[in-house]
Length: 117
Image: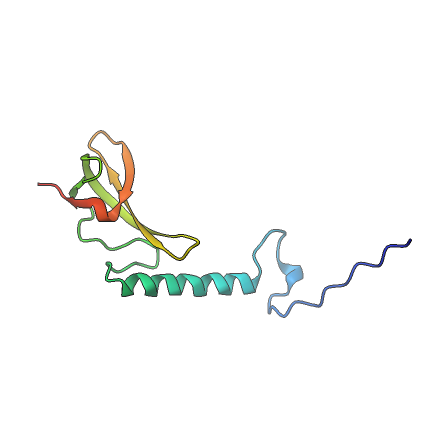
């Protein structure tokens, strides 16, 4: 039984054209959809009353570069960054990046970070 010919793909509606993209590169439609998702993510995070998020994805937290305590572990260090992680179920998780005096870094929930006195 002869196998049917493979169907031909319709030309891409992308202005770039799908033939110009290197193998494995995301299509224009995927890039547009990702950008729209990022905009929704930022708007949703701002609506929840958290601190503003820059275009680089880092939260402009008032305790940045100050000594903080991770209440879950009791460890202290300098808050170097707060990032936002978007999970598949739509939750936004705020991650605090902390560096101890000895140089060891760890992450903790941003809700568990408070100023160290």
